[in-house]
Image (spheres, one colour):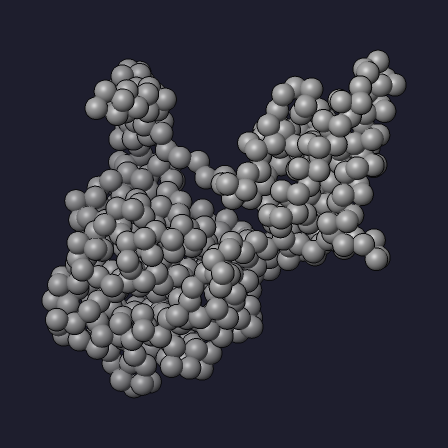
Length: 505
């Protein structure tokens, strides 16, 4: 039997657009005896590392990608080119002018290019959705495989309305940009529009010598999850299901199908199935988390110490001088006294911490943090005293990263940094809300914008909240939904019950 790989799939990281969870996905893929899985979330690569690591854990080859949004008028254009309802349903033809394109990572160059495209979509082209344009695409096409995507793709939408000249022109543009790496995507999703596309794409593929590709545009794991997917889309748009008549389910086929099902559905075009494996075989990209010796690789910005000094020497100098000043200030302003034994204890602790910091390769990290905190304090930007396990570091106290004396308060450095359990150090730093951008601008200019990023926090749909959301979109009375929601245990209660059961066992 031929092999088949899903190369158009949306996970939980297509926020409120897909209900596919990664662990469940890979378990299903293993049950289907697949050898690889692709990830093409809408407009983002939030799940790339998580997807990669879990796929490897399950013995599957991860194919990274993204379904990008292309603004026909250019990414700088603002207007009716990407409304919030663009993704009301994966099977609805968009009311906005955004065009979809699936991009798959072929190698390291492709990963870097896709990262640049997605980042630019947020930083330069964001308007309701992260958007790129053909200008950007032409600059970063190397190492990427492209497919025509869903009904909202440029080639697809033109072919759908019968404008084959325009479809041909667009297909030739992508063929030229992605030589041997552009595929016309076909699906068997039960939509009459898609059936029409499949016929026209077979003709177009023969005319332009383009390969065909079979996909399922997966948004949920099992066919019976279709209704749950519609509820999820209703939560996203804030509409009740009764009001979603224009975008309600007209197909239950956007699920993770077995290879047997896909092969049967595309028996009229075996080439489209075979091409999924050709793509898998041509993709070779791996994240490098460790060097050849097995040591973790860290990517820190470069801190340049004063001329003639190494980072280690400079950290020792700053820490030693800083601790001396701290003890003098405590004596002068807080009337504390330190015996020779006390001072010896401080110095021994400082020396021990410095040895661990330098041996673990985190010297530059401490120097960078003290640098931008020092900048903030010098310029009158309020900075918090320090939170979390970082307060247990005497070096941090000496460098004025934190304001708590760990020896006085009995705090352990090992909770922050421990050579027996290697993990990245992480200082929790609070800046004045109004002047925080000044600190970001400072580090961007000093260390380079390519070394500065802001983190994202993903909200989880908790049981009680989901109950209320589902009740609302189902049109239930608020008081009835509230009664049901209050019957659902809190997450902490459920967790405690699980721990109790484990302890009893």
